[in-house]
Amino acid sequence: MTEQTSVTLSKQTRAGLGYWLEAVQMALQRIGFVAGARHVLVVPGHRSGVPDSALVMVQSVEGERYVMADLHPGKWVQDARVAGRGLLCRGRMEEHVSLTELALPERIALLRHPEMGATVTRLHGDSLSEGEIPNLAARATVFRLKRC
Image (cartoon, rainbow, N blue to C red; front, top):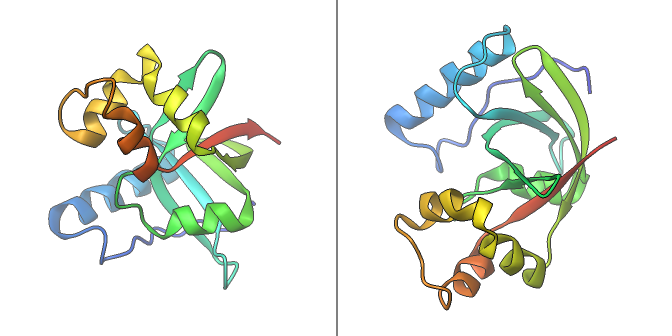
């Protein structure tokens, strides 16, 4: 996927100042500046095949890497499900990856892992009890990243 990556975000899911901040952060990463802890994930569109970019957080748990979508994900989640592959960019580093969606039992086990505590708090807004994690896992989308 060496195509020109476009900085397009769904205006329905990203409103106001957040939309522009993400667009600026993606543009900075595209020209080589690492801005923040997020990566740019480029996946081909599931209908058009045109590459679309999204800012994502990559989590490492026990040597495996994961990408978790927000509770109200954008179009990139559908595209990643269909394509099963993408290009992960951070600054000038590019890496072809395969994207495998985790099943519900795997998501529950991952969200219970101590290294995922900050991500769970970011998604939910505060810390969760052990009994509330399955409800969050049912609403969240998680992909396992593997280098191609």
